[in-house]
Image (tube, rainbow, N blue to C red):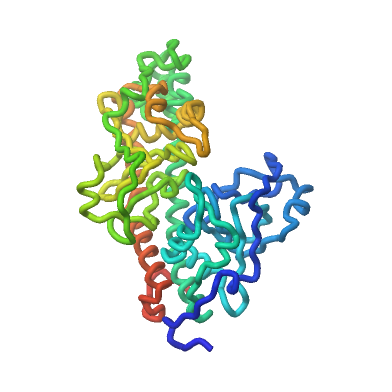
Length: 448
């Protein structure tokens, strides 16, 4: 029997602690445009599932899921490309792709919600890395996975720890969804002005000042903003573009690259965050600081060639290509290889305009056309530099930035970063037993 001391733990192997382990490695399902959502390794990220974007046919479900059907609360763990990402299933009927295992804790030994956080702990992540194999793509065999050592407190303590961390996660998720909405609003404005050219098309039909006022009102902008747009188009390398706007090679738009490609800095468990591709979320503006890797102040000051600055743009260049974020104010972190930092040449671009330009479908399409595919897809800097980019009038860019600035300020608030830091600190200390769960109150629980 376990002691009543909440910090007392008992060691199990993963095999001893779980009642259910499904592994679909080595099998590739036939995918469809709709049907049963398919959980792939690339949508398992930072403790949750990203939106589904691949499916299998309903009539193929039973034959595909012959090894077992997951249920609500089960934990999915990526075992290759990437290794060690986790999420919890919510009861949606799903299919499982390769490179994922599904785990379910044994009754009276392991609480599933606790397992979700335990797998994110440094101790487990270090074990996964140590037991992995492969030079280019790291992966872990099921035989090695089963040997992971889990130090488990009582079920009561497991549930208390999971409750504290899930309460913080719920608050972070609420902020994330708000950020998604704000990001979508800013993206919609960018698309209307700089992709669809709505003001130019509308203005081209106007024959009087009164009609211009009506058009401006219909577009939801002022007459002064409408005056910044031309009223006709001209031919260019990119097709028809607004008169007077320029097409410029991406190379000219970058004043500085922050690139640590090919070099791995010495890292440790605390210090200044070292962010990787998995820290760049697709759906929101700023990078995530949940990481297992940090560098010392000395390494930060002496090892890296260049440091990031506010409003630099980050983009992933290997594996999942084109994930794009912007560096928030008052932040201090550095980037690992496979992430490239870009500083806008302000003779051509406002820095925040550059971020939205690089997230546009056209820019991402041009990246896809230049990918080099060996074991993993990648984009080289010299190939990025050949992309043709549309450069609008700088005063119009300034107006765009001034309109979206309040949205960006909300998305980059200190509250989100503080919550993430609190959650990550508590996760490590609670799971290691360094903190007694009975002494923790995070002030976010509104239950009566």
